[in-house]
Image (cartoon, rainbow, N blue to C red; front, side, top):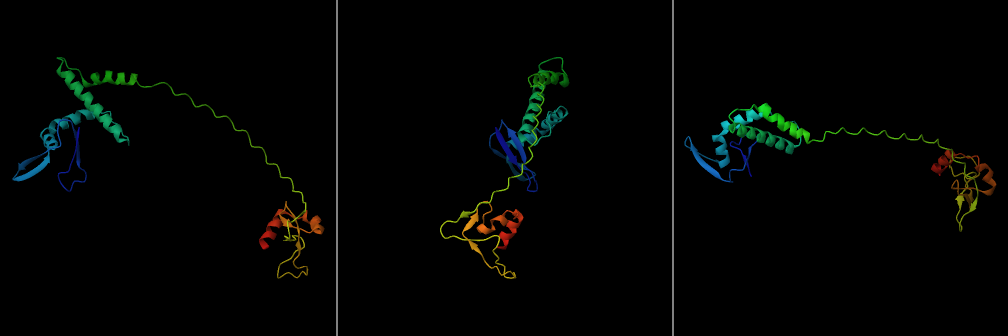
Length: 211
């Protein structure tokens, strides 16, 4: 099969595309009005018999199976199907004395194609199982405060009695301790442990940002 793409004038935005099984990749020269024109052989033959091609396109148009689609291969298949049915009807009419209308000729073909299609009813979608409601969140138990001795000579600022603010009028100053609470992740003197139980998480956050 030969595919030909031809543009006769440079002003043409889209070239003419032809598919042919009767031509080779050859070109011919013809003198028309004292001008030599070079075109593919398939184009010359198309121009010579384009009246019959237009008649064929007209006959296909009234019984076209082509439908709008974005997939180009479907359009090619539908057009080839229309051409095949039209040519078979022409040959069938030439072999019979009594002609058959094209509608009566196409109807059995359509019925045979439909009979091979899968027309079984589609199964109804199964209802999805209902999701179980989420259980309410249980409040977390308050962590227990337990002082642990830091390793080696490490020290931490006491969260309760330490004061590193420069603008503070308190005379306590900086207080370091070798004990810390793993639950709160802050240092604390053993004597300040009772006050640590009354410190909220929001207070811990503000204290860490200030430090």
